[in-house]
Length: 166
Image (cartoon, rainbow, N blue to C red):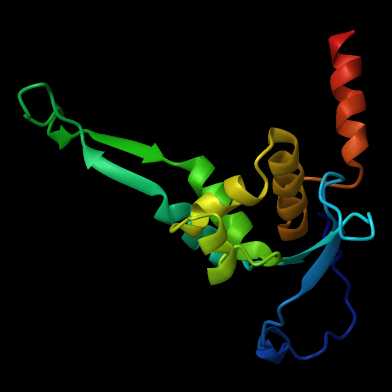
């Protein structure tokens, strides 16, 4: 990013431009072709744009760090430092992000969760979108809305895969 320097008089700097409330934005996106209403029309998903802070809190909540130990339970030490094992459950974090971002369908809805006999809302994306195609479609749609990835044309992904095979 290039920054221009000019010798003109600059307006007084004010922090008030940064002191603004966050307004939740909801984006409507066409759902998977396999989920249709009573008229045979494809349903639309309503996806909340999550804040960066929210996304980071979710991803960090699925990160664990434990002391690395040998078979006898003794910690591994390298020099004078204890070694750690760091694990991330990216799949569960992604499902949590989907459940948090989807306004419609609301995957935290008590009635919907009872229907699927599901007690952990992070498992709901797997229940409501059970096929690989549906789940991947919704994952891409959500991540595109929150600013991670591209969802302009889901059919172009199939074309890219086919052209890569040849």
